Image (tube, rainbow, N blue to C red; front, side, top):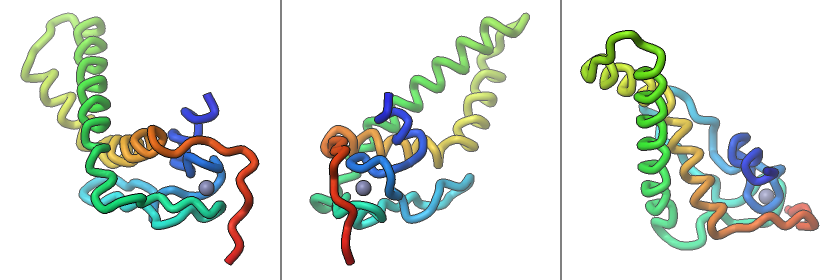
Amino acid sequence: MKTLLSIFRLQCPCCHKGEFLESPPRPLFKIIRVLEQCTHCPTRFKIEPSFYYGSMYVAYALGVALMLGVTLLYWVLSDSFSVGAAFLLISGILLIVSPYLNAWSKLIWANFFFHYQPDLKKKTD
Ligand SMILES: [Zn+2]
């Protein structure tokens, strides 16, 4: 549960306190960049070149889950289901939430490899 909360808050997967991204996700066409190192603990987020390419699989899964959820909700709540309207609805929602999906997918991917260490020392510069 604590890990899910840290993913939602975009915090470091190791200490759950420091920042994970260079800047918070904003709508429309801004690239989501991961910091080199946590702002709170000594964890380095980039363990090898192109490490976060794998997060595309997570983003795909999140996108499909969102698409299925929106389609199901639209189908249940509307009187007349239209595939075109569902497509436009999903496209609009994806356009708005895609920066968050991208950021969350990178954090979920990072949580496969970095684990929570509650007694991690604060970094010293
Ligand atoms: Zn940290």
